[in-house]
Amino acid sequence: MAQSKNSVRRLVQGNEASMLGALYAGCNFFAGYPITPSTEIAEGMARMLPKKGGRFIQMEDEIGSMGAIIGASAAGAKTMTATSGPGFSLMQENIGYAYITEVPCVVVNVQRGGPSTGLPTKIGQQDTMQARWGTHGDYTAISVAPASVRECFEQTVKAFNFSERFRTPVTVLSDEVLGHMREVITLPEEGEIEIINREKPDVPAEWYHHFEATPNLVSPMAGFGEGYRFHMTGLVHDPEGFPTADTNEIRKKLSKLRNKIVRFSDELVQLETTMMDDANIAVVAYGTAARAAQQAVLMARDKRIRAGLIRPITIWPFADDQIRALLKGIKTVLVVELNMGQIVHEVDRLAHRHCKVESLNRFDGEVLDPVEIFKRILEVK
Amino acid sequence: MPDTTQKNDEKKKSGKPGKVVRGERYEIRFSGSGGHGVILAAVMMSEAAGRNPKLNVIQTQSYGPEARGGSSKADVVISKETIYYPKAMKLEMLLAFTQEACDKYYTDLKPNGLLVVDSNMVTKLPIKNSFGFSFIRIAREQVGHPMVANVIALGAMAALTGLVSRDDLKEVIKTRAPRGTEEKNLKAVKIGFDLGLKALKEKIG
Image (cartoon, each protein chain N blue to C red):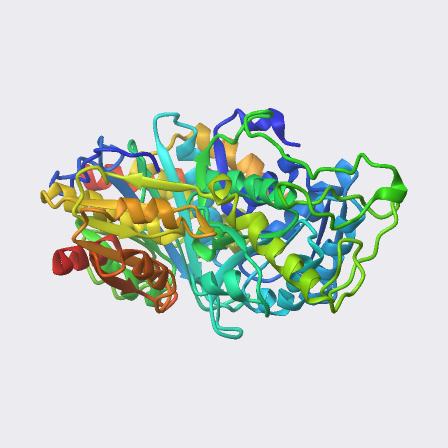
C-alpha cells in the first residue's frame, strides 16, 4: 500500500483514489472489463494488485467480471469491480445473485450519461435508481456517493466495510467528473479509517449453516476451501443454502435480506449539512452536483437568502429520518440532480406536502453551474 | 466539504497575473484537439501549483469519445480557499491550440483575461488581449518533435501566470513526462518559459 506516500500532499485523480481506497481496505481480487470513465481504476489495480500478492483479471465482459468477484469473494477474498452505465446494466443479473447468496463485494460505478452507450466521456447521475432497483426482485441495496477525490478513497473503504459487515454487494456511485478530477490532497494514513472484515464461523464444521439466522441477521461466512461445507444457489434457499418452497422459509429469507440492512440503517447513513441551522430553503444534492450546489448556497447566503445544503453521502438506504427532521421548518426544498429527477421522489416522499419540493435537473453531459442553481434558488425561495 | 462561511467574492478585481488573492478562484483553461496533450499540460500545471502548500488545486477535463481529434479541454482552478465547484467559471487565462477551441471558449474569459494561442493554428483572434506563439512549429524545429508543443505552451503559461516556478515545473516534468521523453520535455519547458517571460517583458516594456 502506498502508505508512506499518503502523508504527502499530492495530485490524485478520483479514480486513482478509489483504487487506492480499495487496496487500503484490503481488496485482493479485482475482475473487470475496462470502460470509460472508470478505466483508470482497472489500470491501477492491474499495476498494484500483483505487487501485493493479489489478483487482477480482465474478463470477457461485465457479466463475467461480476461472476468472478462473487466467486472469489465466496472463496474468502475481498473483491471489487469498476464500471460505468453500460457495464453496470450487464452486471445486474449477477448482482442479484450476490444479494441472494449474500456475498460481499464492491462495485464502483463511475457514472456517465445514458441510456445505452450514451455519453461515454460525459457526466450523469442517471444510475441512482438503478443502484437501488437495478436487478429484479425484492432486496435492499447499499450505495454511497463521494463528492471529492478524498471521499472517493474514504467511501470505497466504507463500501468494503459495509459490504463485509452486512454480507451484501455495495455500489459506489462515482461520476465522470469526479473520477477524472484531480485534487491536491493528502490521503488517509494507515489506521486512520477502521477496516471491517466479514465474521467467520467459530462452530464445528458439521454445525455450520452458511445462511444461519443470527441476532443481527448477518450469518458468519466461511470461504470455499476453509473446511466448511455449504451450498450456494440463486434459488430462494433455507439456512443451509438448499432451494426451498416452504413459504415460511421463503418469507424468512427475503425478510432477512431486507431487515439485515433496514434495521441497522443508522450504521449506514452518512449525511453532510451546510448552513442548515437557520435555513428556510434547503438544497439537496449529492456527488459532483453537490459541489456546484454548495457554491450556489454560499452565493445565496451572500445575498442574505437563508439557504442550506443537505448532502447525502450514503444514498441507499436513503436517510429518511435525518432528512425528515432537517426539512422541519423548511419552506422550499430544491433537489439538484444530473438526471431527469430520481432522488427528488425520495425527498418528495419525506417532505410529504409539509414543504414545497422543486427540482433542477441537467442531463446534457455537463455539470450544473453554481449560477444556474443560484438563479433557481431565487426563483423558488 | 466542511461547513464554512467563506464568501465567494466575485466583486473583487483580480490583481496582476500570478497573484492568487484570498477568497478568489484563479482559473486557467488548456484547450485544443484530442492528441494535443492539453490534459497532460493541465495536470502538470496543477501538480506544480500544488507544490505550494498554501494553494488548493483542482483539475478537471472534458473530451469527446474519440481517441484522437474531437475537442478537448482541461481546467485548472487554484484558490487559497476550499474549492467547491470544480470546473472553471471565469477564466484568467485561456490556451487554445485550435481556432475551434478559441472561438468556443474565449467568451469564458474574464474581462481582462488573457488569450494564448498557437499562432499558426489560430489566425483569427477574437480579442486584443492575446499572445500568439508558434508552439507546434517551435517544438518541431527546436526540440525535434511536435509532440512537446503542449509542454512548450505549459512553460509559456507558467511564465505568464507567474503561478509556478521554473524549478517546480521541472520537478513535475521529471515524474509526469512519459519515460524516455524527459530530456525533450525539460528542453521544451525551458523554451516555453523563456518565450513567456520575453513576451511579458515586451508587453510591459
